[in-house]
Amino acid sequence: MSKQDKMAAAPAAYLKALADQDLEAVMALYSDDAVVEDPVGSEPHVGKDAVRAFYKGVVEFELDPVLTGQVRISANEAAFPFYVLNKSAGVRVNIIDVFKFNDEGDVCGMRAFWGESNAEPL
Image (cartoon, rainbow, N blue to C red; front, side):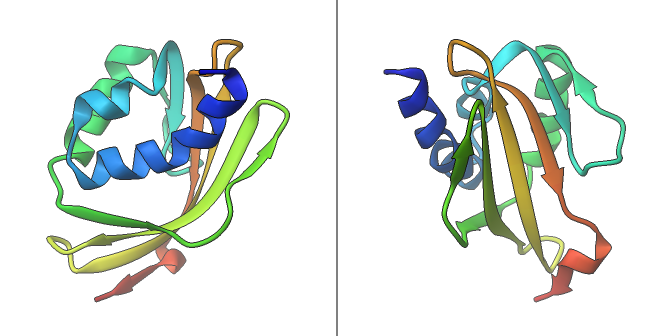
């Protein structure tokens, strides 16, 4: 699979992995030196072990993520809008994620743009 193909497929694979609570599928998208900042402004998770620890907590929730617009790809980055229904927490959160890709097409950076004003009760 080419880098462009991997970049185009990554957002759907990511959302599916979250919905399936599949930690290994999430981690398969990331490079060993990945940095995840979720939400933007929080302490970044640096390196695959830290990223795994972060997502281990995320996939414990039953999430229903839904893409809400086109994936935008420019240079080595992709941005995509979606929302997540977190039924356990009783909330819907509107998010824009930005993936940065390395030369191999693996996600080496992820920044999630959302805050309190983007959450609404179900």
